[in-house]
Image 1 (cartoon, rainbow, N blue to C red):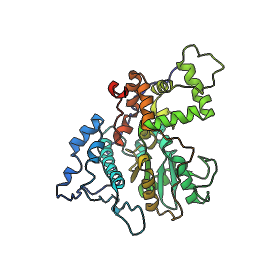
Image 2: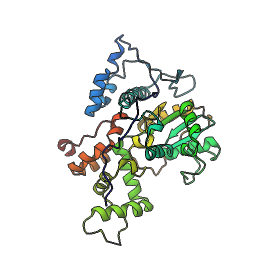
Image 3: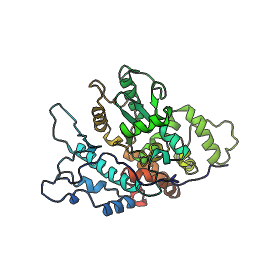
Length: 374
């Protein structure tokens, strides 16, 4: 029997969000002297754009040249984005764009998470939701931070950093196979009172990635390179969705098509998915946890540098460079795979990840017939 389908994974209870992520100055000065409302859209406009899938990316990019750098804050303490050489420098467009994205994400999360059906704390989550979350939050007591890891969003490199900070690894560039469990402390291993204390007092951060890019990265990696995933998931997918193969004992699972993978996802409950393709929302629960910083894969280097500086990491600890064997998911690759899907599958797939698109300000992909012809 196929698993019960659940489109959004949002059976929640609880009140409004009790905290917020890093708050930027609400009034941001423009060199022209215009009011700050010209820099960031009003809440009403903001919600309309989010609902329509535009998500402000075109708006913000047109506003980068005329504004001063906003100052991020958290819990009353100033958190300056200080990147680059000693002595400081003026932020470049990429730095400024990253900070504007932070403000947009903060406002989106605060607004959407204030809905009465969204969770207001870790303890208002269901047992399954809480278990998933706590198993994905890593703890560093020395530097007092919590990191919610998201597979396919540079989490292996972050785990290397945590191991170096704890002394379990000499440096982040050591050429060893990553053990994703050993020498790491997970929030799930702590007692409830210990969890509460760290959620209240520690710096909390996570990193996000464009949903379809992350999904495609998982598909290409797990079904194209990892034999254990081919045997566990690939064989099942082929037997389930490929005609005449239900009882074929010779299936190896190494030739799962993207359309077959998507059909499998549509029949999966988002709360019971494998972590590599489970929506980021369900992994890290940004409505239940007040993250102080949400970095992005698109600004990985600078956002990671900011986090390391903020938590007081030693100067010799840096974020690892991407491995030489890494195969990036390009815009052309995403276009090819999404446009090759039957429109019916695509229309059903996007709602599975709609909270990731909306909360983390990623525009819905353009898959119109006219766009796909090019």
